[in-house]
Image (cartoon, rainbow, N blue to C red; front, top):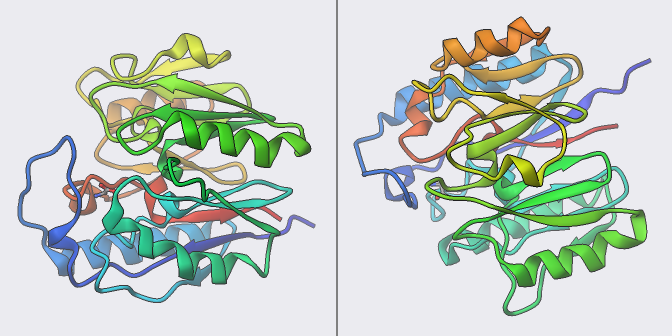
Length: 257
Ligand code: GLY
């Protein structure tokens, strides 16, 4: 019997309008619409094999809905991150509380180290970390120390013009990635790379569930490229939280049984 995937999510903060923005200009966010889209996202997770657990709403943390950045969950261990934006560091405590029932926890805690989970793509025993404005070499070194005993290698990936590695590229199957070649060094990640449609630069972001790829419906041409190679795609509207520089992967932390 397939074990459900546990998906940790968090409601959108009342203060989302004050979110961090790195590569986007600020524009008004319709909170009610964002909440409807988030609810549809949660329904899509539930309908596709996830048991959803909700973390507490954190209205003092504008970006707290983007739970992905606070943890890296592997089959053997979970790493609580040290987010690169100081405003986001208080988000990790409640993630640790929730995760400790599922995994042994380790922490990125070196003073010079910072890393966002959005910069992490795992393929088998390789952990790729985007060298973004949020993640640095000190965190890569500590992550390698923490995960090396479980057989992982950690590798930095050069990144440009986007917030996180998962903005630029995500894994859609073992050794298969979808990415925007303008934003990351695909040669750093051995495997097959499907390019997003050039009209959809943000079209890489994909939640990989068991046999299902959950993606934003705003990227139809890239969705078709993935479907053409056999991807089983489910889409949700995600354009309101995209204004906060968030995408579908950002809104959950997945714990595979
Ligand atoms: N607004 C998402 C982030 O900057 O972390």
